[in-house]
Length: 538
Image 1 (cartoon, rainbow, N blue to C red):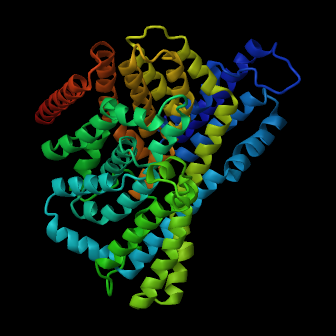
Image 2: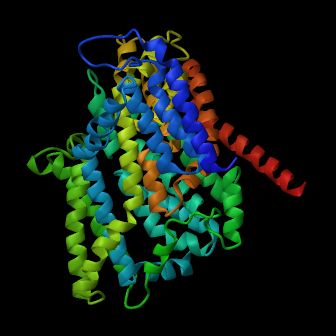
Image 3: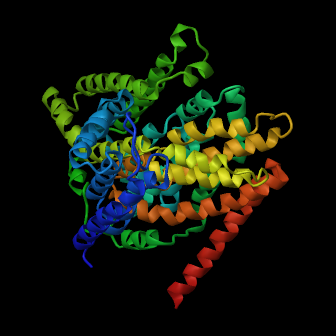
């Protein structure tokens, strides 16, 4: 069946199923509006619809729109006019009126403009030529991409877009597929931020833990954050051993033949013509990126009160990452323009031409993010968080609690596309279960880390996750290609992590659990390598 026909069939089937389920909720009433499905499994139906459609049809915009439409219908109790109004008042307009979201969009646009400036000035081409003389192999290009991702640990949004744009010329030269680059970017961004004590993620975690020293809990949970640590270990292993499996294998084989995209959809291919060589030097890329990094960090510290006497730790804990990135990137843009004008590699008119061109480069990411935020907001109105947290709260098997927390957090993060929202809901519940934490302090730490790890996993592989969207944008990769190729890799690490958390509830020692989990992961990957090699020979 063709994708378009399948999409239409699934849309009709979805609407029919929802209307068939309507009588189940028909007895609801009340003065204050609340959906009949509030806090039930049906609240998760819209994101599930969007995700399934996106993976099947390989088309993200219509899939997200259908998910939004189904969410609006459920929230409005199937009143068409109210549903249409809800899509905009509580959906699109609400998501675009949110200060955090607007700040991220500003950062996206500014970064697109800076990248356009570096390309037009010849800095990207010069850096690619310089790096190609020093990075001789595909393995070196993969490890270099990973290394840059580790260095930019302050914020995952900034990490996704910066690493992809800086390393893309190098990975292209060594015939690494765009899907593989997107995976390397995505698999480094959130996991490295989740184990960095000084990052926007650490600040978010510290902010939702009450009654304890949140920063101490975060640091103690790092050795138990199996998904983040095992993902980093997996990148190193597949780079050194040279293993690819699942859809990624086909993408890498095609890349070696010269096709970096594999699928007919090449939404960013025309932007490669914007990379110019000429007067540009390596410093015309390195210096703007350094200015951007420094000023974005300063911007985050500024919003956290660092210049008003707060410590670095407190400033990061209280920072507004969205506002800080907007302030820092905008100031960096002004300085970069002045720099290129002073270097006389770009004229004033050429700099101004990059403003709309940089914006246009980010339009696909802006559209997908807006749709994803709208779907997430409507899903929250349906009480998806209450339903998921209710499942978790009913769990009484304390020893297996870390594994249960990991699964629940992963499912919620995958369905809603937000890790911050996931641990914002679940972490207080985890702490509440261990109200008498003096008796089981280590199990509390393990359960907290399981919540964070599960949130990262769901966020990592969800098609509607903002970091997943930004990773495909930074790598200039088709979004659904990125999701489908990295999913087997993410599931492999998650399966090993789940087993690790079962053992952690029994052993409760990071010195045992972490090395054992890494050994199991390497064994699984080695078996996969032998299996895929045998298939090729056959």
